[in-house]
Amino acid sequence: MITRRGAGFILAAVAAFFIASATRVGWVHLADAVLWGVVILSAITPWFSVYGLSVQRNRRFNSLVNLAGPVEGKSLDIDIRLTNRWWIPRFLLNVEYSIDSPRATSGESIVLVGVGPRASSQGTSRPVLTTRGVHRLSAVSVEAKGLFGLFRRRRLFTAEDSLLVYPSWERISRVGLLESSLGVSEGMSKSRSGSEIAGTRRYVAGDPYRNIHWRNSARTGRLAVKEFDSWSERSVAIVIDADDLPVQDPGDRPSDYAVRMAATAAAPLIESGGTVRVVTPNGGQARTTWADVMTDLAQIEDQPAGTSSSWTEGVTVGERVIAFVHSGNSDLLSALAAMARSGSDIAAVVFEGFMPGDNAQHAVNILASVGVSAISCRRGELTRAMKTMEQGVAGDGYQAEKTAAVATAKTATTGARTKEHAA
Image (cartoon, rainbow, N blue to C red; front, side, top):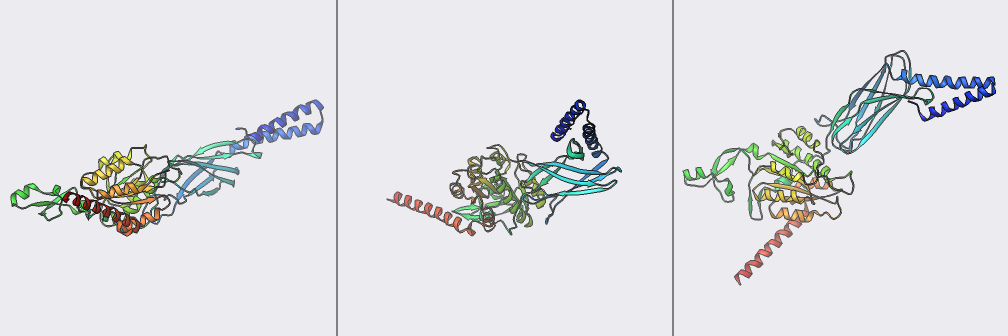
């Protein structure tokens, strides 16, 4: 393919030819011959430069944990090794490929000044991976422009490749927010429920009526409640709000915060001997290793508005849930409140500050009123929210103050109604 410089050079050679033909001056003919010689050599050399080559692409990344790919926010070393199998040296080869992420496409290029006969040359590019998910690496193309860059020739090498980029996370020792959802809160008895019945025991005050084993109660003459398998009691379902919202900064989304906090919470849950299930449209599988949970989280893609709320249909009654939801997703918030009323232990992180006017306070108060252990996370305060998630609601002074205020207001309202009734 001819370049702009080549087109201009050919026009100059044609003009020199007509001038030489009209003037019949010897040095003009000589200059014209030199120009056409350069054009011919420039047209031939790119064709030879891209043949007789082999290209290898290798990926290198630093991982302190057992993950099969790099982590978002980190750089990836991609080594391009080009081998010249012929005796003809190659010069000024431009090696290019592109990386298609779920939200953007970036191009990478390496210039190899020269490759000797039957020799190899290597270059490295270090793209920064800013988004989790599947990244597709295009085929490597090698372009040669030959002498003076008048013509160019491009040829594709290697096959397309894919790479899974994992979400970033922080290290915490426990998920205190989920533990805060257990026990007695505002007069309601919360119990952990698994899916497999291990036996029965005698009823004690505070046990939910839904767990009463009526057949054994009738046989023994005393109330007996179901005991659930301890392994299933330690299982947790993670609900991610992946709805694609019209946020102020496309590079900073609540779904990204949700996945990162979920990755942070999954590690201590797995280490404590439990299982973690990332709720997806297909239900999701219970995972016993953190690497598998990270793989599930990395593959969560942006969804049309209103999609994430339908994922909660795969959550069973009584299952422990930790949810990460934007304050504007009323459908998902309502679904979480309904699950809490049906007896599930729910913990939630509500995001705000991503859209004009979004406010998590109202959503947190509504969830707290039905027994959900909820905290807020404002844009730019992800690390603080992770620490609060580790400590639990009681560990966040601001959140505890708000919860106490809500409880005090409810108590005052109840007392006033009692006095009015007595009067």
